[in-house]
Image 1 (cartoon, rainbow, N blue to C red):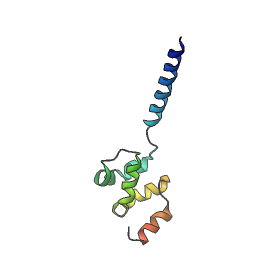
Image 2: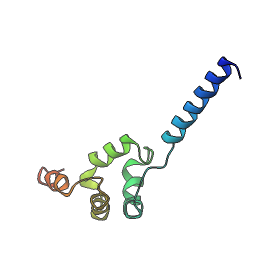
Image 3: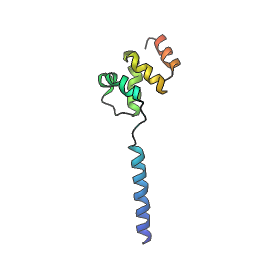
Image 4: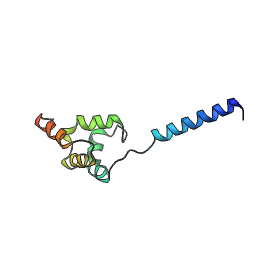
Length: 92
């Protein structure tokens, strides 16, 4: 194999590995998937599952989220109980 061919092969493998990592499914618990389905469809469905914008949307709409969804997010470690309590005190 030529030097050019070797470099091309290495570049292809590197791009393929990066793409696979970027497309990996986010780690979502069964409870979050089940308990936040309604909230996702009503407030944030324009954002992809696992995207930073979805996290922002959920935080922005925190006061509107169902109690079951909030509890599932706390159990999954996506948000802390202290953060939720602080937001509630602030009226969010």
